[in-house]
Image 1 (tube, rainbow, N blue to C red):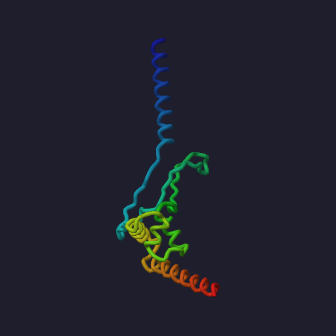
Image 2 (cartoon, rainbow, N blue to C red):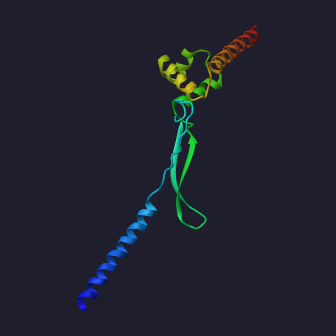
Image 3 (cartoon, rainbow, N blue to C red):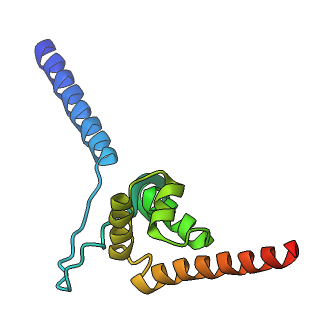
Length: 147
């Protein structure tokens, strides 16, 4: 009788340990659902997006994994666009000098920005044109003050 009671206690401990492991495993896992989508394949969909998974309590107080997505707003592409839109560079060459990179790198960043849908060729050209007009206006105003 004594042996069976000890064996039963060991079995109960093992069952309790297994139940505890299952509970911990359930808390440490998450489920990702993938829904098939048939649409136009576009390379810019996944660029510039940061997805982060965090745990947050739900209404019942249980920790639930939650995905949050946000657009990336830092990096060389965004730095180039900030300088471009400031209107101080009248050409791609001037833009490369301000950023301290080659003209080829500016071309790469420009292409990437266009693929991401952040700027169009027309907007890019308009920024250069605006900077050239601003430069001419400053030259004209500066020249009239000298006389």
